Amino acid sequence: MKKIKIFSFLFGLALLASCNFLDESSPNDIAAEDAITDGASAEAAVLGLYSAMQQPGYYGETYLLASGGHTDDAVTGGYQSLSLDQLGSRAVTGANIITEDLWIAVYRVIANANYLLEGLSEVDDLDTAAKNHLEGQARAIRALAHFDLLRYFGEHWDNNSQFGIPLIQSVQGISERPGRSTVAATYQFITDELNKAAGLLDASQKDIQFINTNTVNALLARVYLYRKDLSKAAEYATKVIDSGDFSLLDAATYTDVFNTRLSSESIFELAFDNQNRSGYNGATYSRDDAIRSELSYMAAQDLAVFFTSRPGDVRADLLNFDPAENDATIIPDGRTQKYRGEESRDNSAYIIRFAEMYLIRAEARGRNSGLVDLNLIRTQRGLAELSAADVPNDAVYLQAILDERRAEFNFEGHRYFDLARTRQVNAVLGIENFRSIMPIPNRELTANEALQQNPGYVN
Image (cartoon, rainbow, N blue to C red; front, side, top):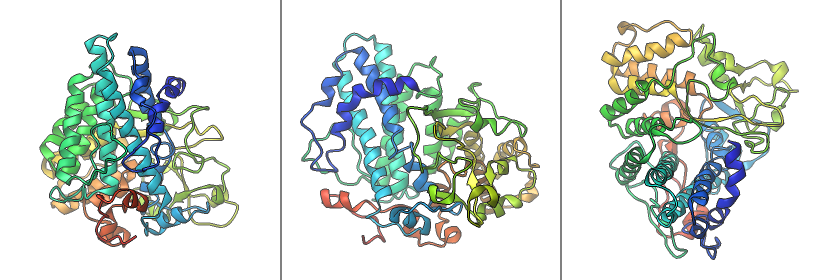
């Protein structure tokens, strides 16, 4: 991803413009779209979108930190932070700096995409196919950003809810104060954008560090699963599975998913390098000699107990609960080793992996025809197949799916959302159901009176 680092400065004007509907003081004097004057600057602007996604407030740190630190997979480390403590105790307020940073960073990506989409109309030295491919990437990234915000801040499990998120579909003036869209309207925008992107992208482009048709199909499978459109979720997961571009690693080589960049199981990943690094105390940092005070959060004993009930599961090998290695003090908690690194902190952020497509299809098809997909993942990870008798009803089958997703995707940003979309945060985490999503940051409520706080939150 070095190209992204080199060229991202060319898109700095859009980063400066940021999200004007969120912050009245955001500089809006520079017309960021003026930076896109030709094909070269348009291509640099697209690279800038990926760079913006790598920022600490988004996939560089905060996205995984907020979702992982709020679940039964993790406990707070020793790094001192009130906002981090709120995540660890599952008592986040609207004053939380971590979720505020997330809101700002993701809407910044959306703002950048909007500037690019407007600027592309003025570019006349690229052929139609090249412009379409750039537009397709921008639309898909804009859709992904809206979806991530919906999962964090909107009632994504309820298509009838009024508590979606603000949809930002164009460059915003400093005086604009958009309110929240409904969940249904938010989902519709996201799927419309992804379907438009699919029709624009060059199908021959397969680099997994960039948005391509496989990425879009995988995102559609994920979004439709959340939306409870199960037939479409299965349809788009099947498109990715049948593409022939990916393969599952077996039990002997599974750890290569995280030890080898751009593995055969990766559909879309954001790679960091020595100069373009992930956050020091974030989810993507677990130096072997790190002590507890250096870590934002650690693997919880609950996760260790979970894996003891799954003998032979090779995914347990990516957790380290050795107290001699985990801290200078006696503590019961461990570390994930999915993101091992020294000072370089050059681990990838894994946005979508191939295993997710099988688990989406397994869930979408139900126990009568989905069990084969669930068992494929289990056997590739060292476990025995489940029989029909092992999953005698839909509730037991869903729990088997969620268990498999927990084993497969711990510390990758799925657990919190899986519990929320299946309405289990109270039963599993012991918190009120309104905490299935985060509060809208107080700063944004103050800046925009059109925004309404999520039910249950008072500050």
